[in-house]
Length: 381
Image (cartoon, rainbow, N blue to C red; front, side, top):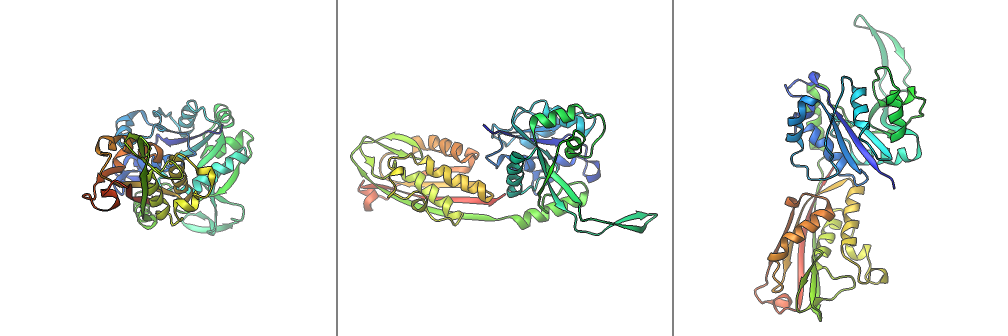
């Protein structure tokens, strides 16, 4: 089974960026740079685990930057060495996955589509890296004067992640005896063929103080917030339980439907598809298809979450309101939140489940069915 480790190198001092703190721990639009970089990796479901290489003096700063991360794929940090190459080697010693993506901690704006390109690329090559062809004119400069123009046709600007088969880059680093600008240089010195993959202009490395201003502007420009609404109804019939948000609740009746009739999870799924402008649950999973008869509704929700990842969106918040007289939802709301948070892969604080009655009015008031409305908020990563 394929596995991908994101190895984030964040052991440098970052003095050129100013600001007192190492740049990876300075705030960028209200969030530490390193925290944003980690988030980029954790939002991609293909990433098996994330490991940061940090300076031994920065452990408290690291814990402060990551204290809100609940994703178990973030593993304990590794301490770096005297040089970047030694720091990478220390990090590689903990990697057990098939592939490793080595990424700069100071590149917090990596777009998900670029990350997907490099993940797909390393499957078919010995190694690859994100980069951009050089388009500017190049000149040698001596004593403050331009002297000789240089050809740029074959030149690329290297970015990260730089992706490798794990055992190959481990051997390359273990046998490297000279400083290297990046891990591509280490791989090339070991005789590995490395393929460039088209990167992204916004995937900047924060190096100087002015880069914080640029990054802040890019965050503002790339913000894409989507809101979707979902509504679903299922009738009640003979049975001894209902399923709501994946939780089985004893009841003197059961909901009627083609699948497991989880009216709450259906509404949430529709809200996510709506935010993506990708139709509704019936278009993705037609009730006329016997394949879905009796199916567990988490299948539908997981597909909607998968589409978010593929489209480069993060589910930022879910609000679900269940409308019924019976059963009582309150005693089960926490279990529903926990189940949804696991499926959607977000912190439970971003999941709201609540209930209301219709004051004995209408079909819900008469106990003929249960209705649910849901709202999903998505943010472009």
